[in-house]
Image 1 (cartoon, rainbow, N blue to C red):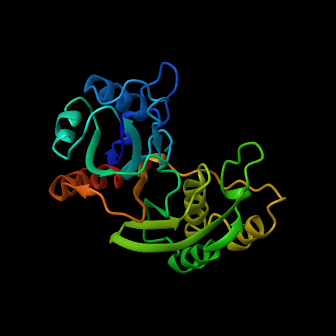
Image 2: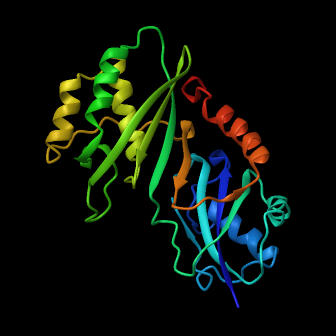
Length: 260
């Protein structure tokens, strides 16, 4: 008999070629499945209905992604410490026994944070005005990588700006779901408005007229972190361990990779 569990995980995206498994590539999902097999917690990921809340891109880190699978053994919070020993730059820190039909893709909300670097010439007023354009429901065709016939409409519930220090802004994006590259493309457009490289009128045009193709570029992935995925239940977590991981992830994600 199997039991389904959901887990809170964090990882340093710099180590991996994205989350999703790929042939002959080192990925977060691939390493997790290897470790679960070695611990005797799962045999076949397909039979175990292994799923993740978000499949982050190469270079993107996570502090609060969620995975779920049917385990052939009972798992307790302390078992996660042994699992972590088999992994590099990936940490399990939370667990919850869930129903057999639980799928983490069906989350209530997702929160992404981007650490953006600015200088004293950065136009904060124009930047903030541009930020206000993106909340609510819009067609984000010009601000995402749209695959096939995927619906380009999404609703961004909130964008919160926090000054980490005089040269670093934390941009927090909250939405039920995001399109591929959406946050990074939004950040690049906002960054170019703040640097006065792009007029805000062009951003409005790209948002209001998605049939006109306008590409503002895509921001550096290593400054992006999936901070949390929200559900209608709480995980049993090792909060002290979480705080340690938080410091690690924040330090690596707030680095100015543009200067390297």
